Image 1 (cartoon, one colour):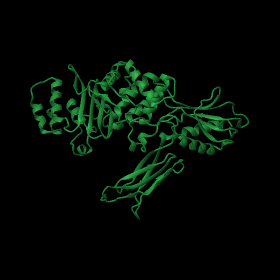
Image 2 (cartoon, rainbow, N blue to C red):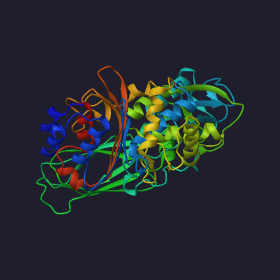
Image 3 (cartoon, rainbow, N blue to C red):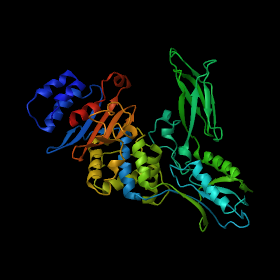
Image 4 (cartoon, helix red, strand yellow):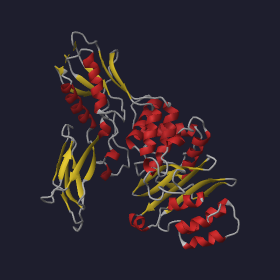
Length: 469
């Protein structure tokens, strides 16, 4: 590997590496690590090298993986469910539509589809309307699971009001997320809050803008109640509008209110009420059905945009399919470990509690992630996952990331990011000139925001640049 052209990008201390005599790939990377490894955080690295095999540093130590966990979820879900698996939201009844009515109850079976939207549900009800339905003599039951855990152990409390930590439920509509905007006003500092008032939630605000960013301890706070009511207060240090993504607190209540509104919109009256139930009725007639896009599309969205709701919905579904009971974080995690173990991944030392990587309780080693990457590369059942990963400077979570938008990394790194406070991880493949994909894992934990502000370039960028050049 030649690296003298690389010296302008890092530090003068790398000059000695450039002037060194011909050395092996592993010796080269050892020298590079000595020069660029961060002083205040912990790192683990594995890089596939030829003919040396793999360069390894701290590869058996356990780290917080963050969203690199989704690599495990992608492989396990593909194996357990199949590329063409779909979530099915169904409407059924004990009797068919006759004389513009259903003489009895209507059941809407929520299936935990993480991509289900209110538009999809509206189309379902329009199917009923096209069959002549105008009146339901009984109740409308929303079939789901009111007892399930909506968040995994180890999810950080102050993440829970934000959409990337939206509740994982059988009842999912619009990603269980409300988009809003807080804008400054010319007349005073009080922020103007806007959101879709047709949504069955209440959001109020007393928040102000610090337009000159001079106030000390200027912080915005979100208070949320269990009945999908939210209140913004505090201060935001900017004069620019702030986009908000607020996670629903009670997805079952949200579903009840959405369905009630859609029934009214479609002029379908009901004698009873819109109610929740855990019981799945038997011997009913299917009247209408909505299917999600196939699993491969969902996995692609999960990897590309690091979608936590898709990841944990798939985890719960794996638990349901494997154990024949309602899916949960607990049985889903056990199912994923079992599936991957049977595929040859050694997870004895790992701790897995969700499929998204959002939990602080997750622990994986670089070696375990590397085994998953090797499986993706070597097993035809999983080869397609490489092309679903974010591409440096081009797509997904690597499109605009610092250091990845220009040569030599742009277009040559296919990888899953994994970031949360203190963790900056990357695991994926280096695309070579011969279109060979070389697996790598770079984990960094204990990464301080103060250090991040001062660093010339992220550790992963420096190392990958050195490898490619």
